[in-house]
Image (cartoon, rainbow, N blue to C red; front, side, top):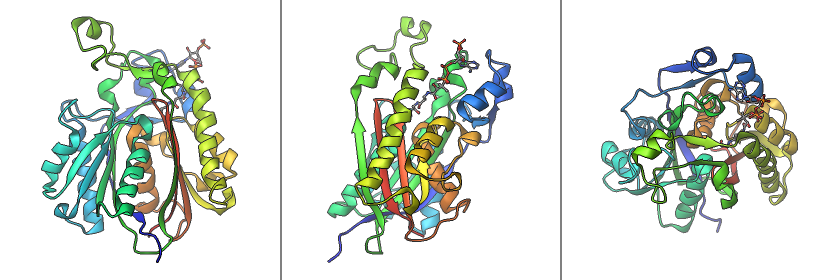
Length: 333
Ligand code: UT7
């Protein structure tokens, strides 16, 4: 009997209307379009209107995802929300989303793994489905990065955008298709290189933390770049090796969108040419937990890439923690 496997049955997304372009940023900090474009690959990002919060975007992405699958919210058994920008520290944003969707039969929780959140969440969902513990799992990657960015800091404000992506994971109807393997890593030595200084239990919010701007993203860009460029490439290559595959077997590479130079280095290392790499960093910037589902959306819904059922797809990400990892799957449509 073949193994019970999970697959991504459908995807949905939400992108705020408002655009923040490189030209806009030139008016806000000492930067320029040419620097941003050549160092990161980003042209513009989306920004959510203040006060709406994570669940506003997540619910909309989830509704589209369920609608595309023809599945009602009541059929969802588990909701996992990957984010570093929840509506509130508690309760989990998954609870708000469960209520708003009317997912009466679901339990759920938030998962924080920085830019690897979506990858870690689908790994969790996959194992729930494979074990028979859960049927349909709604996995959401959603971040309102604009709420934790200092728009006077040119090192970080040019990088991030807001968005949500949702994926419905279900029992794969085809044997040997769906989600096949994961390689996942965490190394807490990265804590000081990419973090938010205050707001948690070690340094709760105070007048001082607000005045010191400690509630924003703080990143040692070049130090993070060095590790990211090596480890994202290594982990993407590793999942191929251990499954007896090479770059030429892969129809689509779906990388986290933090920097075009990191994406290109990983693709080169795997031997995958440009046309088989999903890149949307130009349009959306780094949307943290949302980058991977936004990329899957471009392939599955917008059909921007040449891919057919059964083709091998590799996803890879690197983020705060440090966290990094890759996933191998066979395309579902
Ligand atoms: O997604 C989570 C994981 N995060 C990542 O993977 C991000 C990894 N890091 C990066 O992508 C890159 O390090 C950045 C895009 C953040 C920065 O690019 P970089 O090539 O590492 O630039 P840098 O920070 O070394 O800065 C080079 C120069 C500096 O000037 P000097 O010291 O050489 O005179 C910076 O002050 O560029 C300057 N600079 C800027 N200039 C114009 C830094 N930010 C800007 C800016 N506009 N926005």
